[in-house]
Length: 156
Image 1 (cartoon, rainbow, N blue to C red):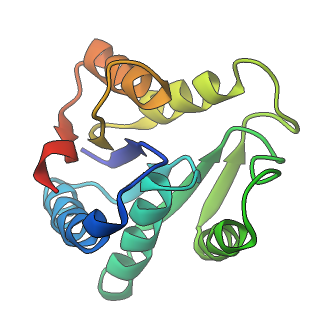
Image 2: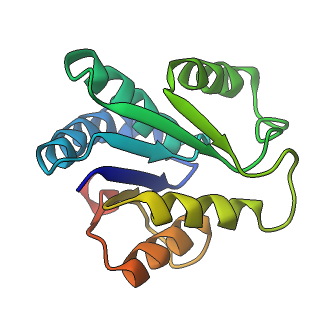
Image 3: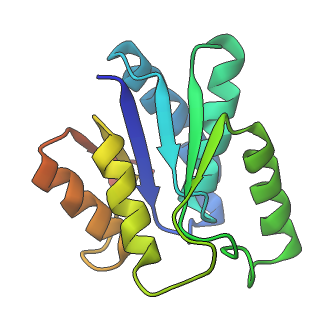
């Protein structure tokens, strides 16, 4: 295994924040022990941001780790709060690479981003509590590809 993708819900209960950070740290260490050195995230608010920050922190002691942001569109942050944009700007500045799917939001760009991450991934770490939406779709893509899926949703 060489790469791991993250996908999860945008809304994370505040009370779950620290538990999720701890769980992500363990999941990243596990993925690393399995050989993953490149970590993909979609750069969205919520789980994607938690995952990106966890990879950035892990990279301090594991400089061979790469963070790649797979961005659906350049204007993804258009309706975000200033605090959400600041977090995004931070992870963007710390990423080793960013791949842009579309210059502007177009129907299907999120799905293309999700599929592109799974096409590159050997493992998925997710936070999925519903059967609908983009995160559930990404989990289905991973299942169709036959890669290991680790859902952290029931653990926090």
